[in-house]
Image: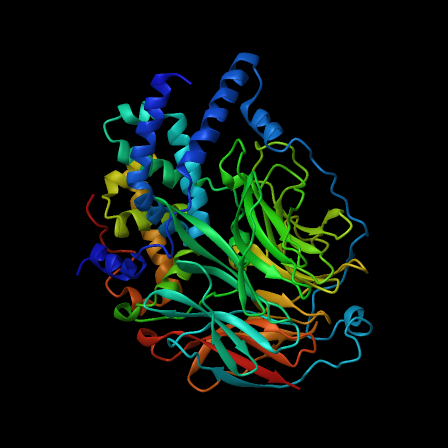
Length: 178
Length: 430
């Protein structure tokens, strides 16, 4: 291994070490499971390592790596149904009014029932606070697609959690600004 | 409040730190990445497709996967007990017909998630959450013990056997990183389970009555990150020596349960493929027999092809199968298999989740009846709904004793969602 590669590895290590917690948190938000989050982050960081020269030369390395994590989640090699087959600790679903949805596990169970792309859109927009344009760029789709995914995702959550939980959000109402 | 603000408010409860730090080992990623890069260069020079090259190097030997007995499919249960099951396999005991419930109040905290119980109904294990941390608890016939394993943070599943041995998973700081610590509690002493060169074992999932412990991990020196190199490991009950279970294909393996004779069940990516290229093929329930043979479980006729196995006891396996037309969440339906006879029997449309099976083939989980969810037990016919103590809502049964007289699980408090928490319930059935 040459000196140049050693330096690159050192750079990569420092870059990743400073962001590992944040990336794990993002993957955890997407997957709802620490073990799966580790898998997703590991898969993404492997891709980052293999493209490290391109990543560090990019205008926005943080955005690049975040994109890799989200795409690793979207391409996770699992059938959806296995995620439904669990042994313990499944919190029962139940409807709840909006200000009372304080039990994260109930919300988590509802979010996990969304298709991965809708779930990613909601997490990125409403927890990570990215704009519609930023999410569109990250997912490689149009702003219109992000808006429709948002609408579909929220509609599904409303159905799962009860209408009262989403008072103020309706399919015919205006979407948020990009 | 506009739509975005409402959505942010709704999703805010999820904006919390993960229950434990990341276990991704950056140094290992670099090691694997270097090798993968060299492989890519070699593949580019030789014209070999990358995915094939990776798969072949990751797992050099692909084991044959066979079905030792032809499947015998029973029709879906419609409420009547299955004659295929109850006449011989149910044993001398008739199924209980009624159960009474009681809450188990933990000695610390207010919540108690039941993770596992033993085959006699004497022991239960689970966690209470206190100040955001999981506190492991052992319940022994009415007496709680707060366990104190040698970890910084307890995480994951706790398991217990009929001897009262308890095993679990936690984390411990090691230099700048965090490492998994797998432990077992026997005769008042905690022992950290040994790792094996070349592997990283990350979590405990089950333990049988002779003390064999089933866990999961991944191959450390693999060409791909651990997502495709998950595997099962069994620590011998006699001396805790770890043995890695053979993988039938270069894909991930998720083990779930170990029987008293050492039989292991789990789920694996399609055993009939040899490369990573077609990674969306269905998954298969797999059985690792004590004699070293490995085979997959078929879906009921007309369904599948995907299957998954969750629990095993005396030749009975509890799991699920793909049913795309069933309209259930995740396109999953549930079934039990009887390995000696080859029987596979759908459990019925009411079941929304299943957890464990006992030596009579009786099983527990959660059902939905008229839009309402209940913890329930099944004997091969119509499920028996488990009564709720006053003030408790829906939930999941996760423990059933071998005689079927003791069932346990976790229910949600209700009706106030804002103060809802999870509490343990034990049912005595007769």
